[in-house]
Length: 449
Image (tube, rainbow, N blue to C red; front, top):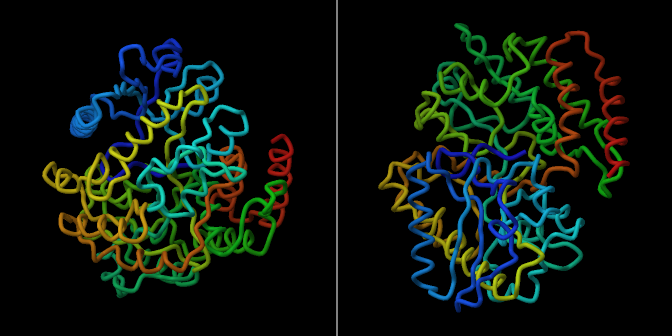
């Protein structure tokens, strides 16, 4: 799964329609006869996102002015990538020259032989060595580079500082273990008036997504290291479900309404009726802009458990039919748009602040070393949110193992949805049996590839 958006308040954007012809959307023509290299790109914000659309168009225009020999044709739609049409676009030759992907797509696109090998050209991407290695590695398959990360997120614990204070808890010391989460949730729920201590998803594959994050937090996994067998029927898997069961049924700290999805939980947090839930930092502006929350009340802590956290994000890959000139042009475009600290579509914090977009959230944090220092410096100088509320998250993340989603993630999440929802809706749920059944179903999914 992905989280809910970027630094701003819109979700991922932009896919070229299958109705478009290959020449309009793919890479069959680089327009070299005109003396220009033409590249098609996707994930342009739609016209309905006026501010972001304007930013994107400004940045493309600036790039073309700086590089008069390159013509950039951007395509927009919602979302940036539609899983239902993604493979068909690739197979049908309708994918853009430079196209958006989730981290979990990288190996698949390479396996079906639809990605250009960027290895001979990557030295021309000035920013490449400044990007976090663990993110670069996601797009490296069998020693070859097939893509470039653009943004990343890691899961943490969003909590309501005001409710912590009301419950007699220290808002500057959020829970670091699942035992502490349980204890704090119980105290928050005891405030009454419909207040819920801790909420979790359990429908639309989102329950499986969060189960995976909770497994990582305890040092577990959902599939084996070789990706061939389920790894949920373990002490860590049992601990995750037992904890949810106890909070739901013994403590009554999760409320009676279950089968929740992200919008339900965001609404609860934004209205001040929820103490804690798992999320990435990009939820925070949505809680404020759309759900009635207040930045000063919302804080972020690292994943409880202290072992690991689920990471996700996106990047760009290149069409296997791209010419060398198109690959070089596309790499220049990525540097300009997304990978120069303190500038570009995601990094121009002064422009974002001027347009009342949130600046100062702890992620995405793409760079390392001097590039990261510069990016953080410019971000801090333009911050318009309480950055001190996120320091615990930043500090704690340094000690966690960062793990991407499993292979066949959506199919596995669908299985685990049923596991989590059973625990949250049936007091007498048999955890051992649920994990055994889930393990068998996941094994079947992995066997099919």
